[in-house]
Structures are given as C-alpha cells and as structure tokens.
Image (cartoon, rainbow, N blue to C red; front, side, top):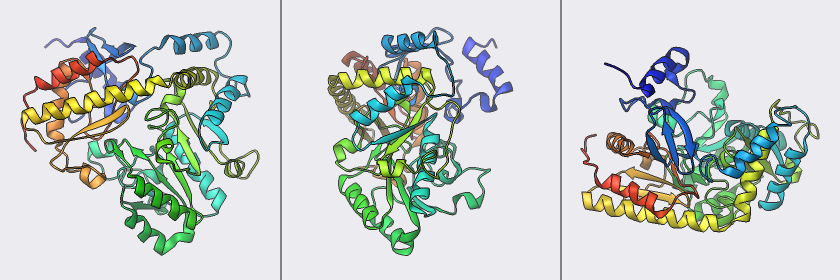
Length: 431
C-alpha cells in the first residue's frame, strides 16, 4: 500500500528518533493512526505535509495565543536575526523583556531567564531550597512541572496517557524529598506539614492545572495553602508555565488575589520560541549566583531571538486587554456549545475551563476536582472523539489529560465549525 507524505515522513522518523518524535505525546501511540506532520501555520490554521488544513486548538501546547506566525512576532525575529543570534553575553534585549515583565506583572521584583518550563521549575525549587536551607518539597498528584527527576512522581499528562506511574531512570534518592498532596484538598497538605513542617522548603502548584486536564484550584483551597506556607516559613511557588499570560495577562494569581513567593513562566513568554523564566521577591532572587550562593546558569539563557519574540508578544498582549475579553467570549461559546451537543447525544461530559484553556472530560462525575477524578475519564471514548475531529479538520490534543487552547485570531465561526464536527460524531461508548 502506498504511503502518503505524512506516513512516509513519520515512518522514516522512527528510524532516527525514539518513537519518531521529540516529545512522547506527539506519537499518537494509543490512537492507531499516523500523526499529521505539520508543515506550516497561519493564524488559526495549521497545514500538514499533504496540504490538509486544520483549525488548531493545540497552539504548540499553549504558546501561540496570538495565532501562528503573527506578523509582528515574525518581523521581530527576522529583524533581530540580521544582527544577533546568540552571544552568551548581556544584551539590551534581555533587559527590555525582564524590565517589561517585572513592571507589568504582580509580585515579580526580579527575574532569571532560562530556556524551558522544566528548567524554570527545577531552578525555582533549587532556589527555594537554597533560600530556606530545607530539602523537602510538596507537589500535587496530577500536576506536571517538567521532566526533572524530583517532579516525576504522580505527574500528569504524558505519564497518564502512557500509563506510566513515574519514569524509569529516576533514582529513589532523587524523589525521596518529594511529598505528594491531593489537589484541592487542604487536609492532605496539613497532614504532611504536621509531620515535617520544618523540613519543607516549598510547595509548588499549578494554580490552574493543565496536565491532568484543566482543573482550576478552588479559591478557598489556595487561600488556606498560602496561609499554611506563611505560618511555616515555606515558600509557595506558582507554576504558571501554562496559565501565565493565558488565563489573564497577569496570570492566575491576578484573579485569585494570592501572592506566591516565586512564579515560573514559559510558553507564551517566548512568542513560540524555546523559553522559560522564574521570578519573585527580590530578597529571594538575590540568593542566585552571582549575587548569592545558589548556582544556576545557561549558555542560551536570554537568547536574543527569544527575547525579541517574547517582548513583542507580551507587549502586544499588554497593550490589547480586549484580547482577553475576546478569548473569554470564545471560551464561553465553546463551553456552552460542547455541553449542549453532549446533552443532545446523551453523553456525560464535564467541561473545565479557565479563560482560553479548557478540557472536555468524558466522565460520569458531576465535577472534576483532582487527579483521582480525572483518572476516571473514558480514554477510549476520547480517542474515538479525537480521531473523528481530526478527520473533520479540527486539531485537538491527542490525550484526554491535556488542555485545548484558543487564540486571538479565532472567531465565532471557528467555534461553530468545532461544534459542527462534534455533532457529526457517532460515539461508541466502550471502556
């Protein structure tokens, strides 16, 4: 049988890259179909090697909030590349982005640029340990903070999709100081603090979880968590790699009204290029080398192309607050529409959404509040749904435990096309 171009490329990719991919979820391992090999993107659309057009609700897993190849972002990259690609030296471009973030975000006095979300979170943990002189951290089951060894315990997304409880290659010593609490359950956190409060350097949390599907933290839960950390001189770290600049320009902390000690960023802040950062209170950040004793470095940190794309993206978002009103309107239209279609089809779904990120859980529960709830979702039904939507030209996350993302180039008719595709699906409810 002749292969199409997508199949040819993916088949050859498996010879040279494990699973044919550079990040596991892209492989569509449990879907029995070849993933489209994407060639180009424009605004709300992406196109595969066969030329097929898809309305894109993945958005590079979150960064493309301005849509693909935004003209101003592309121009900033092109203009910068004429003079600068990499130096490993101070540049005005990194100052410009750092100053913009520190002056437009709440609770960020100083910031350190890195190259990925994983690098941001692992560095924030190291800083918290150096600042407090303590070793243990608390994370929440289902929250994914990157592939750093100390985080690969009860992580979300990829390991949920793959059915892996953790990861091979992670020594027990690497996770012995990672303690696991239940999301949206303050009693589980209090139980940990009651046994070892003076050993806990930090609590790290996604205030809007996106890697067990979208699950927003409940306000009272976050308030109590913040209070508990303050009482025990434990740092509270908000992982806003996904939610930062997406659920609101100032991130999740802006509508919870809670000030974490450290915050991590990535995705949107790089305008689509590899990026990351962590920031917070000056007294904590000044513990970083060369001012303090906590060492962290990176050859490509503050890369000129990334700084240019990031600044252009964040400046555009900051100057256009109406974008967030539009995204909320689109999200509301999607959420209500999906619920209506599901009801028409007799399907049990829970739609969790915060602003421009959402997950449709095929789940019999009334609400999805944590990792244990999310795990009850019908992944086979989601797989059937995903494959149908892809055939109809709707690009969705290939996992029940991921978020879909909206962008400012979308209009109501893109949402209507999504709902129209969903209406034409004939679900087979098999677990």
